[in-house]
Amino acid sequence: MSDFLDGTAAGRPESRVCVLGDDLVVGVGDPRALGWIGRVSARTSRDEQSIVVLPLGVPGETTGQLVDRWREETGRRYSPGTLARLVLGLGHADLTESVSMARSRLNLANILDEASARTLPTFVVGPPPTLSPHLNEQIGELSDAFADVCQRRRVPFVDTYSPLVNHDDWLTDLTASDGVHPGQVGYGLIAWLVLHGGWHTWLGVPDV
Image (cartoon, rainbow, N blue to C red; front, side, top):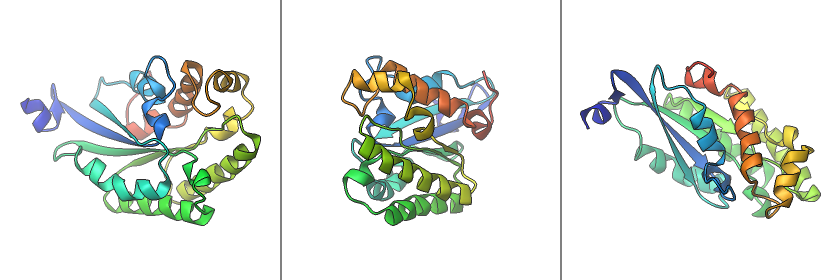
């Protein structure tokens, strides 16, 4: 118990990684209930530091709703002595809820700017495509907007849209579900993109 309270485990520093986003953050549709976060966490070395990954997903969450809850959610899980980190797994709910592109950009920018002011390292994963060509066109634009916001602030951003929009395995996985939530294969593809998108460097751990 004392190791937990002072933020160390077996003499190693402890990192607490809060992952906020929509239902994809908690792996909805994955029969193994791992999602991409569980798979990424399993491939993350803990030899040099103790890493606790905390998925905090809300189905259908917009960026505005994310702005409203991220401080309280993370504040309840970070503690003195731990290395706090924030991951944003962004979805496409802004599009279905008619949030303007400008507002989506501003919402993300506000979170990143406040996190930076708090010296809270942040990592962003963009929205993946669906089976809807019309929606996908908008998701592509939204992903580009998110990428631009992150690039301007030198925050790591993983584009999941471009690599997956025409990926046969991704499309097959979505076809077998509801057209939005992937299964094991799809979540594995997102995890691969995250792991090869600067994840280990951002955490400061070796690539395993």
